[in-house]
Image (cartoon, rainbow, N blue to C red; front, side, top):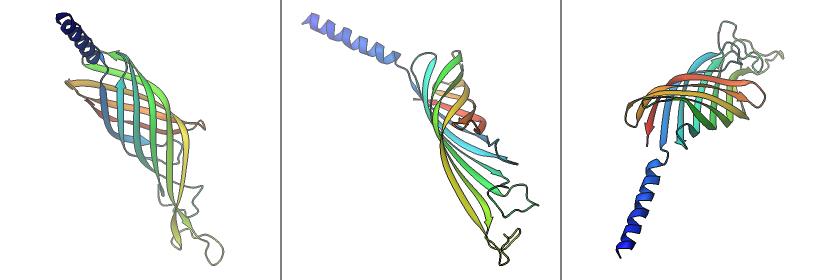
Amino acid sequence: MIKAILCLALHIGSVATISAQQPKYEVGLSYGFYKAPDYKQAVNKPYLGADFDYAISDRWTVSSGFMSGKFAYFEDWRSNAYRYDSYTNADGYESHATFSVLYSVIRSNKFLLKVGSGIGLFTQRLKYPYASPSSGGAPSQVGGDVFISEESKSYVELPVKVVGYYQVIPRIGVGFKAGLYVLSTGNTAGLHIGPQIRIGL
């Protein structure tokens, strides 16, 4: 009986030790500036992002994330309703769903700096003005029958990101997130940088 109790206690102790050594989950919430470098006269707009991380060792982390960003730009290819007195005439909406592997290049009791990459899905929606032909057959340049046209597309992408944060109190960290997205076409879909809060679970 005593032997059985000792074996049970050792088993429970082993399970507790393994559980204590298991990596923890973290949620990162970020907000900042989003840039679309491939578009003419693009104006930076805010983005919102969320990352769900699982540390598989002291240095390695797997992460799934979502980001939604917006930008304004001047559309001179798809649009025929130009307003030459306007700096921008169109809006772009982009979202990124990604899976990444990160490595902690700096890791201390209080500060962590991680870099990594992975794979993702990029979805874009563009909204720009388009003028229907006038009675004379030419599109209206100012005023007239102008409506908003939309175009959507999706690509596989390669996300590259850098995350750095300082552990303010146990389970709470503040820092930054930055990175870019490279499309399967070779173009850069977006650049982003902004503050981030990290919550350990």
